[in-house]
Length: 262
Ligand code: NAD
Image: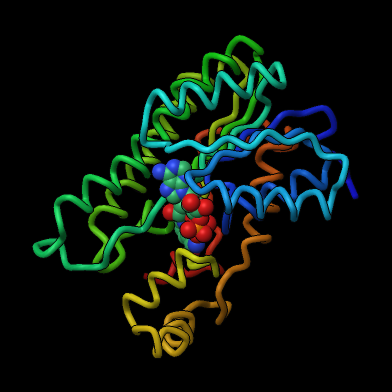
């Protein structure tokens, strides 16, 4: 295994499940010290168990925090620097889908919650990590947008608004901080099979019909399948590894080609 992350420190939010967990595993196998943040302590413990099975030497810090709480974000960044002394990579990943409803019927409280987590959470993360990377004159950030951050998708006003905003904020920060040797990019995953997508399919097809709804959903994907979390994990590892330093301000789809087809 190529150890691109030897002696590097990587901070990951939403590390208890899905895309965050898969990236944590990939990056741990490549030698990183990891600071893992999630709202769900039990989920973080599960990620820790998987990492220590795959890469027993990994130095880990588990931090329970809500990314929509600015003080909690400042604290998870401070705690990481206190333990490891630096932050080389930041995977700003935690997010929620919200409910599915046409815009006129979209619940305003749910709208606020999605914006608080998906947009403000990503903003707070960058706000507190960027000064550390600027001081180091090195570092890479990957923010998580979505195909819904580059295209409209049905019935997800808040999600699409938040993810378009993440794409925009990424481009903006990339221009501001490129001169300090930082690389700031976003990824735009299509449907990747995680707990979030199962939840979304259940909203469409119900408890009994969600698997059928999933088959129908991917029947129009050029690859005819869902993406796998580990496929996204490998992209994130590349973007955080330092191998991709000149990629800056990009919003990179990883969707089997589906966003070209809408
Ligand atoms: P997931 O539900 O499997 O994992 C999300 C994790 O984030 C969970 O462990 C959850 O506890 C944590 N989390 C949620 N709210 C939080 C908060 N306020 N503070 C801290 N942690 C919180 O979802 P996933 O599919 O792995 O999604 C991860 C990211 O990828 C999200 O930003 C999502 O919008 C994005 N995304 C996912 C897909 C997909 O198809 N799975 C597609 C495009 C974008």
